[in-house]
Length: 115
Length: 115
Image 1 (cartoon, helix red, strand yellow):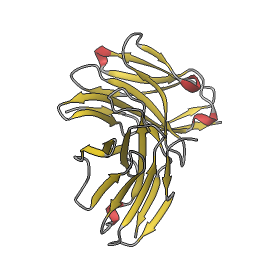
Image 2 (tube, rainbow over the protein chains, first blue to last red):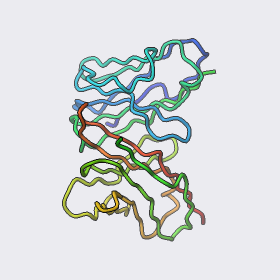
Image 3 (cartoon, chains in turn brown, yellow):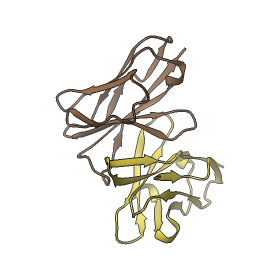
Image 4 (spheres, helix red, strand yellow):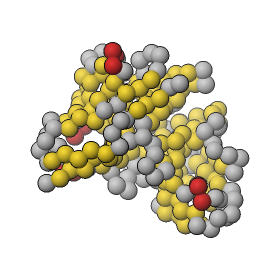
């Protein structure tokens, strides 16, 4: 298979709890991206990885957000002390390499609802 | 500042009618240009992309887009819409800036198809 997979598909949590969102990119893709899609909004860039390193963390909304990638494959986006405004769909994408012209392949997303 | 504008939040067309979705960008040079489609509950899928050369680009599912440098536009077209085309469409630009490569997405246009 494979496309990009994400888990869980849906997550409901209470305000103040921590959540972890997982992304499995396409095998062999070195670049991995996280985006946030809020209702009626476009895609907001959060962070990208080239291999296991994240050269650009400028899109993370606050220090409650962090992400890691291990083994050049799976990535986890962690949101600590969730707030209601964190409710959104979190999309992960991967591309063969990092570049302005590279096609990104997207997962189905994790829909997060913070009550 | 670099930006991507999709002026139409939503569009309704009749099945069989032609379609044009607008996209304008703001960038000092010619960026890489993309159109993605997002069906309900799915991630984004690439329809087509433009780098250089022929300004009329053919994509999947019968879509095409035309790059017009003078208008900084990259409008998506389809001569005859099918009910299965109902989805959200995102225009994106890939560009190189001082921080490295960056992809900027528009806010999306939701397409409704009526029988």
